[in-house]
Image (cartoon, rainbow, N blue to C red; front, side, top):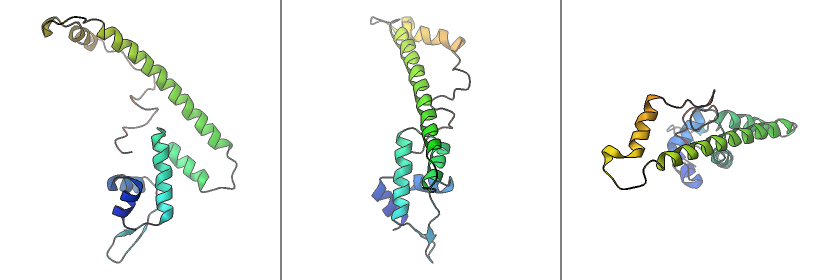
Length: 154
């Protein structure tokens, strides 16, 4: 199947498929004489695996590690368990950070209870005051991830 068919079959944008190929998550497909990529069922299965991992917010590095284990089915899965345990820890940390963010937003929202002109809006004033002294994220924290670069591609 061509890349458009793979995209349609898996619900994955063509650019994402190409990105995963560049990142080494999908094996490079053979090409026709006209230089079209030709994908097979194993490409679709691997792409679904990658997409499922991404839906669980796993990093590309974590997915690469899982794929390496998938490609070596005779290996012991103790490291797979450790990888998932570490990912669960990252998720738990992010949940704690999101709860703190929720508290901050609720406190900010509480600063403006009535309808008034924007010049006297407690929320806008609170945001302006906070802009002068921004709260630093926890050490080693990358906003929205556990050590990942921006994830515009899913």
